[in-house]
Each structure stands twice: as structure tokens, then as C-alpha cells.
Image (tube, rainbow, N blue to C red):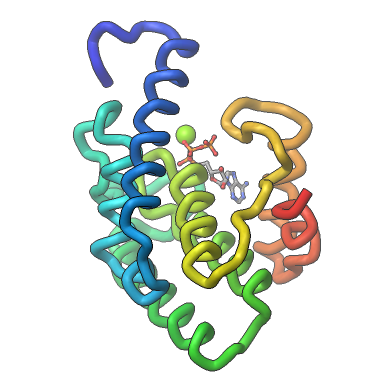
Length: 175
Ligand SMILES: Nc1ncnc2c1ncn2[C@@H]1O[C@H](COP(=O)(O)OP(=O)(O)OP(=O)(O)O)[C@@H](O)[C@H]1O
Ligand SMILES: [Mg+2]
């Protein structure tokens, strides 16, 4: 984190500017889903979103957290997720919308990075949707970064998906 930032407000703004820069970078690329669903891209996007805040941006976790996979398995599970989704795209296993929701839930459940997983996984999901010719999700139509009723609803819908029921999450992402 830059030394001149000492309080939460300016930190959020700083991070948000960095994330907007990443959005512009992604928009300039016009990637196909096969390029997005790669270990290289998933890390590169995290780095582009957070390089101004964390020196370790773009690197997978090396410690355990209260959510997420045991850290030594992060790379393998992320690779499996990417390959599954590529397969599911090719075989029309789910509707685009349901596939994107399941992808989001699994990515955030792996929790590949020490921080920024929610924002990164939401952006990955939106980029994936755009690559499929779909609209991005509205994600409750509010910032999910701070504690709020909408964020509670988001977390509750992820917990539903943890138990195998994606219905709440499917509704939430388009609300
Ligand atoms: N109990 C939970 N069950 C499932 N997923 C959760 C749970 N709590 C948090 N998450 C997911 O983890 C994310 C928070 O992880 P992290 O702090 O790494 O991301 P972030 O981008 O910094 O957070 P934020 O979502 O606040 O912007 C949430 O956005 C959500 O996607
Ligand atoms: Mg966080």
C-alpha cells in the first residue's frame, strides 16, 4: 500500500482508480473466452486491478484464509475450473447466464489471492460474459465493497451456492 494513504476513504478511491484502469485495459483487448480462461489472464487481471495497492498483486495465496481452498491447491483448482468452464462453453452444458454464475461462485470459493477476490471474480465474470456476447451483470446495482444490505444479500446468495443451490445468486447478479 502506498505510504501516503493512511485512511480507508482515500484507499478505496485509490483502489477504484486502479480498477478503472484495468477495465480500460481489458476493453482495449477484445478477448475470446479461451484467452480469458487461462492462468496467465486470471493473474494478469488481478495484477492490473491492484498493482498500485499491493506489491504481491497477481500472485496466488501462500497462506490459508478462513474461506478458500487449502493454499497449495489454489493453482491446480484454478486450472481445473478454467478447463471445466472451457468444456462447458463448448458443450453448452448450461445457459450462458448460469455458466457465468457458477464460474463466479467457484472462483470466489477457491479464493486464489490474499485479497481482492470478490472484485476480481466479479470482473472476471463480466469479462467472460462480454466475450460470449452477453451483457455484464448488474450485481445488485450498488457497490459491494462496503458492508450494506445488498452486500449481505450477495454473501447469502454465495452461501446458498456453497450448498449447491444457485437460485439466489442467479437472481442477485441481475438485480
Ligand atoms: N461467507 C462467504 N461465503 C462465500 N463467499 C464469501 C463469503 N464471504 C466473502 N465471500 C467472497 O469473498 C469476497 C471477499 O474476499 P476478498 O476480501 O478477497 O475480496 P475483495 O474484493 O477485497 O472484497 P470485496 O468483495 O469486499 O470487494 C466477497 O466479495 C465474496 O465474493
Ligand atoms: Mg477484501
